[in-house]
Image 1: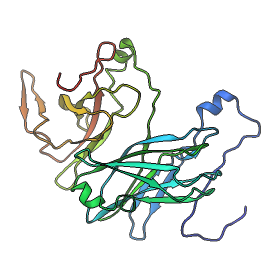
Image 2: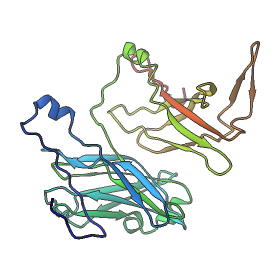
Image 3: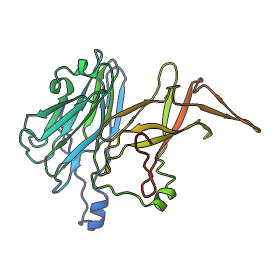
Image 4: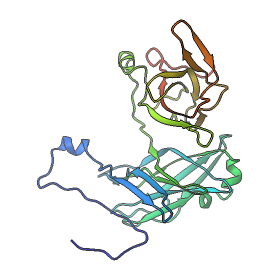
Length: 299
Protein backbone atom coordinates (compact mmCIF):
# COMPACT_ATOMS: atom_id res chain seq x y z
CA UNK A 1 0.00 0.00 0.00
CA UNK A 2 1.37 3.39 -0.97
CA UNK A 3 1.35 6.02 1.77
CA UNK A 4 0.85 9.68 0.95
CA UNK A 5 2.50 12.51 2.81
CA UNK A 6 0.29 14.13 5.47
CA UNK A 7 -2.00 16.86 4.15
CA UNK A 8 -4.04 19.45 5.98
CA UNK A 9 -6.80 19.55 3.39
CA UNK A 10 -7.62 17.52 0.32
CA UNK A 11 -10.01 15.36 -1.67
CA UNK A 12 -10.37 11.65 -1.05
CA UNK A 13 -11.79 9.73 -4.02
CA UNK A 14 -12.86 6.13 -3.41
CA UNK A 15 -13.38 3.80 -6.38
CA UNK A 16 -15.26 0.55 -5.77
CA UNK A 17 -14.67 -2.23 -8.31
CA UNK A 18 -15.60 -5.88 -8.84
CA UNK A 19 -13.68 -8.69 -10.55
CA UNK A 20 -16.38 -8.83 -13.23
CA UNK A 21 -18.74 -6.07 -14.39
CA UNK A 22 -21.95 -6.22 -12.33
CA UNK A 23 -25.32 -6.53 -14.11
CA UNK A 24 -26.83 -3.28 -15.35
CA UNK A 25 -29.72 -3.54 -12.88
CA UNK A 26 -27.25 -3.56 -9.99
CA UNK A 27 -25.29 -0.66 -11.43
CA UNK A 28 -28.49 1.37 -11.58
CA UNK A 29 -29.57 0.41 -8.07
CA UNK A 30 -26.23 0.80 -6.28
CA UNK A 31 -24.64 3.95 -7.58
CA UNK A 32 -23.31 5.51 -4.37
CA UNK A 33 -21.22 4.17 -1.49
CA UNK A 34 -22.94 6.22 1.27
CA UNK A 35 -19.65 6.36 3.16
CA UNK A 36 -19.71 7.92 6.62
CA UNK A 37 -17.52 10.93 7.34
CA UNK A 38 -16.46 12.18 10.78
CA UNK A 39 -14.67 15.44 11.55
CA UNK A 40 -12.93 15.82 14.91
CA UNK A 41 -11.61 19.05 16.39
CA UNK A 42 -8.71 19.31 18.82
CA UNK A 43 -11.11 20.22 21.62
CA UNK A 44 -13.29 17.14 21.08
CA UNK A 45 -16.11 18.46 18.92
CA UNK A 46 -17.36 16.16 16.20
CA UNK A 47 -19.44 16.47 13.04
CA UNK A 48 -20.71 13.37 11.27
CA UNK A 49 -22.62 12.82 8.02
CA UNK A 50 -22.81 10.40 5.13
CA UNK A 51 -21.22 11.38 1.86
CA UNK A 52 -23.54 12.18 -1.06
CA UNK A 53 -21.12 13.28 -3.76
CA UNK A 54 -20.23 10.80 -6.50
CA UNK A 55 -19.56 10.33 -10.21
CA UNK A 56 -22.46 9.72 -12.57
CA UNK A 57 -21.85 8.97 -16.24
CA UNK A 58 -23.75 11.46 -18.35
CA UNK A 59 -25.46 13.26 -15.47
CA UNK A 60 -26.89 16.50 -16.91
CA UNK A 61 -26.43 18.55 -13.75
CA UNK A 62 -28.75 19.03 -10.77
CA UNK A 63 -30.87 21.53 -8.90
CA UNK A 64 -29.99 22.11 -5.24
CA UNK A 65 -32.65 22.23 -2.52
CA UNK A 66 -33.13 21.51 1.21
CA UNK A 67 -30.28 23.78 2.30
CA UNK A 68 -30.70 26.07 5.33
CA UNK A 69 -27.89 28.28 6.62
CA UNK A 70 -27.35 30.64 9.53
CA UNK A 71 -25.65 33.99 9.01
CA UNK A 72 -25.30 35.91 12.27
CA UNK A 73 -22.64 37.83 14.15
CA UNK A 74 -21.46 34.56 15.72
CA UNK A 75 -22.23 31.93 13.04
CA UNK A 76 -21.46 31.62 9.36
CA UNK A 77 -21.97 28.93 6.75
CA UNK A 78 -20.08 27.49 3.80
CA UNK A 79 -21.18 25.11 1.05
CA UNK A 80 -18.42 22.60 0.27
CA UNK A 81 -18.35 20.95 -3.16
CA UNK A 82 -15.88 18.30 -4.33
CA UNK A 83 -15.30 17.83 -8.05
CA UNK A 84 -14.64 14.54 -9.81
CA UNK A 85 -12.28 13.69 -12.69
CA UNK A 86 -13.76 16.19 -15.18
CA UNK A 87 -12.92 19.84 -15.68
CA UNK A 88 -15.83 22.29 -15.63
CA UNK A 89 -15.79 25.96 -16.63
CA UNK A 90 -16.32 29.09 -14.57
CA UNK A 91 -19.98 29.63 -13.75
CA UNK A 92 -20.84 25.93 -13.40
CA UNK A 93 -22.47 26.56 -10.01
CA UNK A 94 -25.29 29.11 -9.57
CA UNK A 95 -27.04 29.82 -6.28
CA UNK A 96 -30.12 31.65 -4.99
CA UNK A 97 -30.26 32.79 -1.35
CA UNK A 98 -33.69 33.66 0.10
CA UNK A 99 -34.57 35.24 3.44
CA UNK A 100 -37.71 35.00 5.57
CA UNK A 101 -39.33 37.84 3.62
CA UNK A 102 -38.78 35.86 0.41
CA UNK A 103 -36.32 38.50 -0.82
CA UNK A 104 -33.66 36.89 -2.99
CA UNK A 105 -29.99 37.29 -3.86
CA UNK A 106 -28.45 35.49 -6.85
CA UNK A 107 -24.80 34.52 -7.11
CA UNK A 108 -22.55 32.63 -9.54
CA UNK A 109 -19.42 30.78 -8.44
CA UNK A 110 -16.71 32.01 -10.80
CA UNK A 111 -13.70 29.68 -10.34
CA UNK A 112 -13.48 26.73 -12.69
CA UNK A 113 -13.84 23.24 -11.24
CA UNK A 114 -10.50 21.53 -11.83
CA UNK A 115 -10.32 17.71 -11.58
CA UNK A 116 -10.54 16.44 -7.99
CA UNK A 117 -10.63 19.97 -6.59
CA UNK A 118 -12.33 21.18 -3.43
CA UNK A 119 -14.48 24.30 -3.45
CA UNK A 120 -15.78 26.22 -0.44
CA UNK A 121 -18.60 28.58 -1.28
CA UNK A 122 -18.72 30.92 1.69
CA UNK A 123 -22.17 32.48 1.88
CA UNK A 124 -20.74 35.86 2.93
CA UNK A 125 -18.50 35.91 -0.13
CA UNK A 126 -21.47 35.25 -2.39
CA UNK A 127 -23.88 37.62 -0.61
CA UNK A 128 -21.93 40.55 0.78
CA UNK A 129 -24.69 41.72 3.16
CA UNK A 130 -25.63 38.18 4.28
CA UNK A 131 -25.95 39.01 8.00
CA UNK A 132 -28.16 42.07 7.44
CA UNK A 133 -30.06 40.23 4.71
CA UNK A 134 -30.84 37.34 7.10
CA UNK A 135 -32.22 39.65 9.83
CA UNK A 136 -31.52 36.97 12.43
CA UNK A 137 -33.59 34.33 10.64
CA UNK A 138 -32.51 31.24 8.66
CA UNK A 139 -31.69 31.61 4.99
CA UNK A 140 -32.53 29.00 2.39
CA UNK A 141 -30.16 28.24 -0.47
CA UNK A 142 -31.12 26.69 -3.80
CA UNK A 143 -29.58 26.74 -7.26
CA UNK A 144 -28.01 24.34 -9.73
CA UNK A 145 -24.79 23.04 -11.19
CA UNK A 146 -24.29 22.24 -14.86
CA UNK A 147 -21.32 19.86 -14.54
CA UNK A 148 -21.91 16.55 -16.32
CA UNK A 149 -20.90 13.22 -14.82
CA UNK A 150 -21.14 14.53 -11.27
CA UNK A 151 -23.69 13.96 -8.51
CA UNK A 152 -23.50 16.71 -5.87
CA UNK A 153 -25.32 17.31 -2.63
CA UNK A 154 -23.18 20.07 -1.08
CA UNK A 155 -21.81 19.75 2.42
CA UNK A 156 -23.23 22.60 4.50
CA UNK A 157 -20.72 23.57 7.19
CA UNK A 158 -21.59 26.07 9.93
CA UNK A 159 -18.80 27.41 12.15
CA UNK A 160 -18.49 29.97 14.91
CA UNK A 161 -20.36 29.75 18.21
CA UNK A 162 -21.25 26.16 17.29
CA UNK A 163 -20.14 23.74 14.60
CA UNK A 164 -22.45 21.61 12.48
CA UNK A 165 -22.31 19.78 9.16
CA UNK A 166 -24.89 18.08 6.95
CA UNK A 167 -25.38 17.55 3.25
CA UNK A 168 -27.98 19.44 1.25
CA UNK A 169 -30.45 17.88 -1.15
CA UNK A 170 -31.13 17.82 -4.86
CA UNK A 171 -34.53 18.37 -6.43
CA UNK A 172 -36.39 15.45 -7.99
CA UNK A 173 -38.23 17.10 -10.91
CA UNK A 174 -39.83 13.92 -12.25
CA UNK A 175 -41.75 12.75 -9.17
CA UNK A 176 -45.25 11.61 -10.14
CA UNK A 177 -48.44 11.83 -8.03
CA UNK A 178 -49.37 8.75 -6.02
CA UNK A 179 -52.70 7.07 -6.78
CA UNK A 180 -55.24 7.42 -3.99
CA UNK A 181 -55.04 3.73 -2.96
CA UNK A 182 -51.23 3.96 -2.75
CA UNK A 183 -51.46 7.09 -0.68
CA UNK A 184 -53.87 5.44 1.77
CA UNK A 185 -51.63 2.36 1.99
CA UNK A 186 -48.68 4.61 2.88
CA UNK A 187 -50.66 6.13 5.78
CA UNK A 188 -51.55 9.34 3.90
CA UNK A 189 -47.96 10.24 3.13
CA UNK A 190 -46.56 9.96 6.65
CA UNK A 191 -42.78 10.14 6.48
CA UNK A 192 -40.29 8.15 8.50
CA UNK A 193 -40.25 9.32 12.13
CA UNK A 194 -37.21 11.14 13.45
CA UNK A 195 -36.05 12.38 16.84
CA UNK A 196 -36.57 15.88 18.13
CA UNK A 197 -35.30 17.31 21.42
CA UNK A 198 -36.98 20.05 23.43
CA UNK A 199 -35.50 21.29 26.70
CA UNK A 200 -34.58 24.64 28.29
CA UNK A 201 -31.11 24.32 26.74
CA UNK A 202 -31.94 22.85 23.33
CA UNK A 203 -34.93 22.72 21.05
CA UNK A 204 -35.78 21.67 17.50
CA UNK A 205 -36.89 23.58 14.44
CA UNK A 206 -38.28 21.64 11.49
CA UNK A 207 -37.49 23.11 8.09
CA UNK A 208 -40.14 22.18 5.54
CA UNK A 209 -39.46 22.26 1.82
CA UNK A 210 -41.99 21.73 -0.96
CA UNK A 211 -39.65 21.64 -3.93
CA UNK A 212 -39.88 18.21 -5.60
CA UNK A 213 -42.03 17.21 -8.57
CA UNK A 214 -44.03 19.43 -10.89
CA UNK A 215 -47.09 20.19 -8.72
CA UNK A 216 -47.05 23.89 -7.93
CA UNK A 217 -49.56 23.74 -5.05
CA UNK A 218 -48.87 24.48 -1.41
CA UNK A 219 -49.43 21.52 0.94
CA UNK A 220 -50.52 21.27 4.53
CA UNK A 221 -48.40 19.20 6.91
CA UNK A 222 -49.76 17.30 9.94
CA UNK A 223 -47.70 16.79 13.08
CA UNK A 224 -47.61 13.81 15.46
CA UNK A 225 -45.42 13.75 18.56
CA UNK A 226 -44.57 10.56 20.43
CA UNK A 227 -42.63 10.14 23.65
CA UNK A 228 -39.84 7.60 24.11
CA UNK A 229 -42.37 4.90 25.03
CA UNK A 230 -44.14 5.36 21.69
CA UNK A 231 -47.21 7.06 23.17
CA UNK A 232 -48.85 9.75 21.06
CA UNK A 233 -48.65 12.88 23.21
CA UNK A 234 -49.60 15.55 20.67
CA UNK A 235 -51.06 15.85 17.22
CA UNK A 236 -52.05 18.69 14.99
CA UNK A 237 -53.84 18.62 11.65
CA UNK A 238 -52.72 21.31 9.21
CA UNK A 239 -49.85 22.25 11.47
CA UNK A 240 -47.89 24.17 8.85
CA UNK A 241 -48.47 25.15 5.24
CA UNK A 242 -45.46 24.07 3.16
CA UNK A 243 -45.36 26.74 0.50
CA UNK A 244 -44.10 25.85 -2.93
CA UNK A 245 -40.50 26.74 -3.63
CA UNK A 246 -39.70 28.43 -0.32
CA UNK A 247 -38.56 27.51 3.18
CA UNK A 248 -41.15 27.04 5.93
CA UNK A 249 -39.42 26.82 9.35
CA UNK A 250 -41.50 25.51 12.26
CA UNK A 251 -40.46 25.32 15.91
CA UNK A 252 -41.98 22.40 17.79
CA UNK A 253 -42.03 24.54 20.94
CA UNK A 254 -44.54 26.96 19.47
CA UNK A 255 -47.50 27.02 21.86
CA UNK A 256 -49.73 28.90 19.45
CA UNK A 257 -50.01 25.98 17.04
CA UNK A 258 -49.68 22.85 19.16
CA UNK A 259 -51.68 21.25 21.94
CA UNK A 260 -50.49 18.27 23.92
CA UNK A 261 -52.94 15.46 24.61
CA UNK A 262 -53.23 13.57 27.89
CA UNK A 263 -55.50 10.56 27.88
CA UNK A 264 -57.29 9.09 30.90
CA UNK A 265 -59.47 6.00 31.02
CA UNK A 266 -62.65 8.05 30.74
CA UNK A 267 -61.85 11.40 29.13
CA UNK A 268 -59.25 13.25 27.14
CA UNK A 269 -58.01 16.61 28.37
CA UNK A 270 -55.53 19.13 27.06
CA UNK A 271 -52.52 20.74 28.70
CA UNK A 272 -49.77 23.11 27.59
CA UNK A 273 -47.18 21.50 25.36
CA UNK A 274 -43.90 19.83 26.25
CA UNK A 275 -43.34 21.28 29.68
CA UNK A 276 -40.95 18.51 30.70
CA UNK A 277 -37.58 17.81 29.22
CA UNK A 278 -38.53 15.26 26.64
CA UNK A 279 -37.06 13.55 23.65
CA UNK A 280 -39.79 13.19 21.12
CA UNK A 281 -40.22 11.10 18.05
CA UNK A 282 -41.79 13.24 15.40
CA UNK A 283 -43.70 12.21 12.32
CA UNK A 284 -45.16 14.44 9.62
CA UNK A 285 -47.64 13.58 6.92
CA UNK A 286 -48.51 15.57 3.84
CA UNK A 287 -52.16 15.84 2.80
CA UNK A 288 -53.03 14.96 -0.78
CA UNK A 289 -56.40 15.50 -2.40
CA UNK A 290 -58.68 12.96 -3.97
CA UNK A 291 -56.50 12.18 -6.71
CA UNK A 292 -53.96 14.16 -4.78
CA UNK A 293 -55.74 15.34 -1.58
CA UNK A 294 -54.09 18.71 -1.55
CA UNK A 295 -55.25 21.38 0.82
CA UNK A 296 -54.37 24.58 -1.02
CA UNK A 297 -53.74 27.78 0.86
CA UNK A 298 -56.98 29.34 2.07
CA UNK A 299 -59.04 26.15 2.04
